[in-house]
Image 1 (cartoon, rainbow, N blue to C red):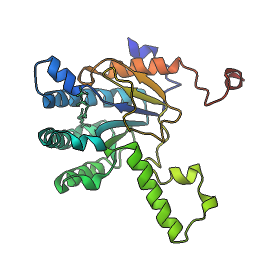
Image 2: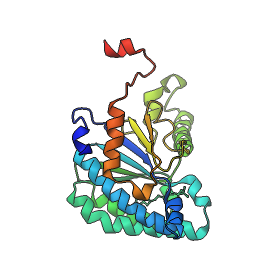
Image 3: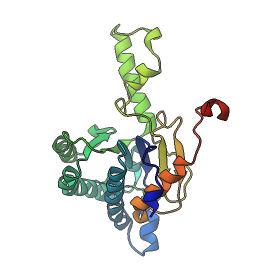
Image 4: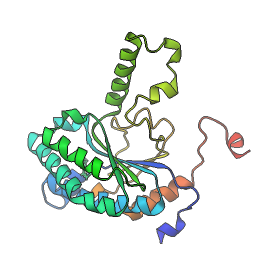
Length: 246
Ligand code: FPP
């Protein structure tokens, strides 16, 4: 079994996923796009379970990008209610699996009702100590960098920081992922080779794994395959092989 090939002493702490291909999968099955998104929730369930089984600490899923607001209104509305329904329905399951849910993104841009449901789910799972499931909602990497910059400008204008104090750790403290390590592995499904404004700052040294599988067909076994692939790579962080091995 593929899980037996995963080295248990070298599990990435943080895996991030661009869940792509729901629409094309639905089309392939002669159905509407929302059918693909609905099926995608099954994949989320399987991958969350698999991440928990491996002891991954953080799993970030790109569930709704800033740009997704530009989709036809019917699709945005359908995605929104699907998200809320899935989250509400899954809370008991998350608690049972000791999963702590969190959200990154411009949550203020969501309808009040959606915000409320998200906050309830976050609160309800807040004392869990297993996998940290982070949903990127109304998220984009550029938005994150801008919101961090705005906070820092406000502090500078208030005289709370000097130019010299602005270094990488200080900047990271203001990103929405401030308490989360950078993802070692970033997976994108559906055969597209793009980062699509996801974790731009945070993925500076991530290993990318692309698969042609559409998200609704992706299961935890595919996550294990990605991790086996990741474990076979040499991460050099700008150094030479020799430096890494010594
Ligand atoms: C990309 O496929 C997928 C999305 C924009 C939405 C992803 C959301 C889910 C799978 C639901 C998540 C639910 C929870 C509980 C986190 P696409 O529509 O861009 O597909 P296409 O590229 O084939 O058109």
